[in-house]
Length: 469
Image (cartoon, rainbow, N blue to C red):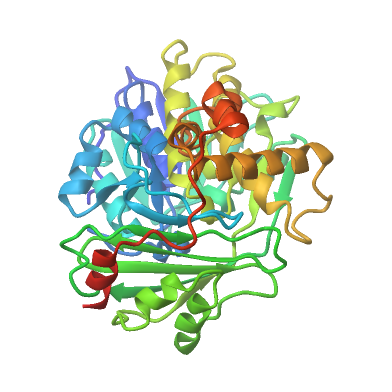
C-alpha cells in the first residue's frame, strides 16, 4: 500500500476525506472523478486482510443487504465479483437463511426472492475495498495522520489541521468530507469555528455483542450452509439474539447479543450456554460440538446516534458529513455498510450537477446524504426505542403504532411470498418504508392467502446432518 499515488494537479479542485473507512473509501471513489483527493486516516491500515485498530466491531458478524450490493456495484463495477472470488457469498433471502423474527415467527424459506445478503468477514471486505479504491488515480492516502480540526470560519471550511508522529500541517481543500464514523468530532469542530451545536438524538438499547470464531463443522462448507439468525424481541426486558454467519476459509462467525440485564459475557465457557438459552436453542445446538478458533470478543458501543446536520440553520460552505458520522446504528440491523455506499451515491448525484467548489454544494450534499440515513434510522429506532431506558423520552404514540404495523408486516411476510418481497424491499434498503403500505403487503395482510406459521427453525435434515458430521 503506497502513500504516494495521486499526484495533485493545479487544474483540478482538491478534496480531503477524513477517514479511510468504508464510507471514506466510497466517497473518495466519487470525488476522484472531479478532484484530487487526499484521504486522511489516523490508523496505519493493514496490508491484506487483517484487523484494523479503528474498527473494533470488525470481529462481529456483518452483512451487506442487496440495496448495498447494488450501490457498491454502481460505485465500483466488479467489486462484488472480486469479493466472491476471494471467498464471499451472495446468500439469497430467504431460501439461504434460517431466520426468526423479533415477534417470534420463523420465516419460510421461500425460493423466489430477488434479495440477498453479501456475506464475508469484515476484514476481507475492507481489504478488497482498499485494494480497489487506493489504486484509482487522483487519490492519495495519508495514514497515521490524525485530524485535529477544521480551518476556516462560520461561512466556509478551507481545510483541515493534521498531526502525525513527526509534525503538524494544514491541508487546504475546496471540499472537506467527514467520513470518520460514529466517533466523528465534527460537532466539536464546527462549534470551534463558531457555529451552533448540531441537534442530536440518541437511542441506546444497551446491547452487548459477543463473538467467537468457529471452524465450520462437518460438510457444511460443501453444502452452502444457511445463515442462521434469531432476532431479539424488544417486548422482552432483556432482548437476546444471535447469528451464525458462514464466511470464507471454512469458518463460522457466531455473534450473540443481549440488552441490559441479559448481556453475553466474554467468558468462553458462557458462550454456548447463552446460545442454548435463546428463544430457540438452534444456534447453541449447531455450535456446541464445533471447534472454536478464537476467544470471545465483546463490544458495548452499540447506541443509535443521529446528528441532524441537514437541519442546521447555519452550515459552512465546502464541508459535508457522510455515512455513520451522520448516524451510527445498532449493528444488529446490518445497515451500516449499505448506508455508506448509498451516501456516496448521494454525493455523486449532487456532483453530477454541481462542481466541487460551487456555492452551496456542501449543504446540498448534506441534504442528499440524509435521505438514505433516515430510512435506516427509522427501521433501527422503531425497534430499539421500545427497550426500557433506551431513550430520554419514551416512544411516541405514532412510533408505537408504526412498530405494531411493522410486526404485522413481518408476520405476513413470514407466511406469504408476495408480502415478503415488499418487506425485503424495505429491509434491504432498496425502497422506502412506504412500500410496506403497497398492495403487495396490504392485500395478503388483510385477505391472504397465508401459509401456516412454522413451529420451529426450517433446517433440513440434510443440513442438520452436515453440521453434526
